[in-house]
Length: 491
Image (tube, rainbow, N blue to C red; front, top):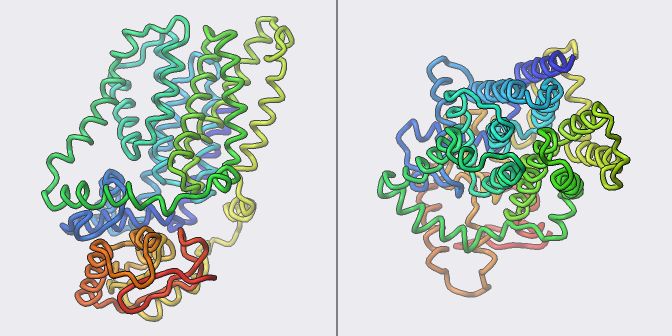
C-alpha cells in the first residue's frame, strides 16, 4: 500500500511538471541563464556576476546543453532532470530502509516531501538538491552501522552524489556531520570500518575535487572570485541578514526541530542499539544541523529551511517504526515517562510540519492537476507584459533591483538577455549601508557604477526597469537613482 501511495505521488509530481513546465524558482532560472552564458564562453564573476560559488552554475549546464540540442525549453528539461534525481532518491530510500522492515512508509514520506517542495516553488533549489542527495547517503550509513553492507558501486555513487550536493554550500556540512556523529556514537557501530567505507571516501573525493578545481580556473575568474567578490561578500553581504527576532519568527521549523531533537536524544540514551532508534537519532541531528545552517546564513529565506524539514519529515515515520517495534516486543511506551510522551511529540512535529510546509494556496494548485482545463499557462504579470511590449526575443533588458526577482524567471523564460554583467544588483545594499550623504565615492562604489555604465553603453538594453516596490535588504525603502549614486528613500 505504501509503495503504491509513493508511486502515485511521484506520478502526480510528473503530471504537475508536465502541466506547469515553466513553474521554476527565480534562482534556478538565473543559474540556467548562467549556464547558457557559460556555454557561450562567458567567464563567471567577470562577464556575468552572481555572488554564489560556481558549482550550481556548472550543474545547470547539462540541462541547458540538452535543451539546445533537442530544441526543448531549458526550464522544462531542468525540471525533468530534477524529477529524475527525486525518483532515484525515493527508490534509494526504499532499498536502503531494510533495517526498519517497512521501507514503503519511508518511501511514501520522502515522495510526499518532494511533492510539497514542488508545490512551494522550491523544486530544484540548492537546498532541495542537497536533501535529495544527502538523505540516501544518511540511510546508506545507517545500513552500514546496522551491519548491512551495500554494494560497492552503489556506495561509491551515493557518496559521490552526496558530496556534490554538500559542496553546493559550505553550510550543508552541518546536517551531514550531525547525522554521522549520531551513527558513529551509537553502540555496535564499527567506527574504523565505517570511516574507511567507500561512500565516505567518494564523498570526500567529491568535496576535494570541487575544492581543487579552483586552482585550475582561468586567472581572471580566480582573481575576481577570491580577491574581489569573496572579500566583498564576507564584509557586506550581511546587509541581507534578517533580524534575529524576525528570523526566529519565520522559523516555525525551530519548534519542530526542538521536538525532533528531544525525542531523538531520548531514543539514543534509552535504546540506541536498535536500528529504528539509531535512524531516528540520526535524522534528529540532521534536522538540527539543517536548522543550524538556516540560522548561520541569517537570511530567513524560506527555501533555506528545506534540509531541516527534510530530516523532520523522515523522522516521523522513523519514530512510528520505533513505537511499532516497542509494541511488537510487548514493551509499552509507558514503561518510561519520557518515552510515554512520544505519541504527543510525533503529533506536535506533524502539526509544525503541516503549518510550515503547506502553502495556503496548495489546494488551488493541487486541484489544477485534476482539472479538465488543460490550459495551465498562468496569466503574465504586469512586469512580464512590460517586457513583452517593449523588447524582443534576444534583446537585453536591464532590471535595477537588489533582488533576483522580478528579473528572473521572467527574462530567462522569455529569452531576453541580461542588460548588465550584474544579474542582480547585490552589491548595492552593502554599498548603500556604509554610504554617507555628501561623501565622495569610494573605490568600490566607483568601480560598480563604472561597470554598470559601461554595460549600458555597450549592450544598449531595449528596456531599463526600476521596480517601484520596496527593495530587499533596504529596510522596506525604495531605490532612487540619481547622478552618480543610488540611495534609500523612505516608503
